[in-house]
Length: 61
Image (cartoon, one colour):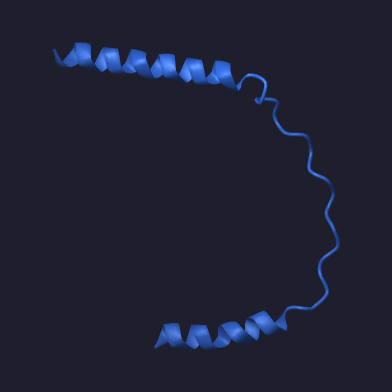
């Protein structure tokens, strides 16, 4: 019953919004420069994963 009521009032909420779009926002700041070093980051993550797998297999044996 509650879901039906909420679904019914959803139409009123969406119609209550104005038709004019909001003003454009300021441009986003430049992102973090990880694009140039993504291969190094991948290699470090792969090496760390292999190290952890080796350490876990050594622990079980």
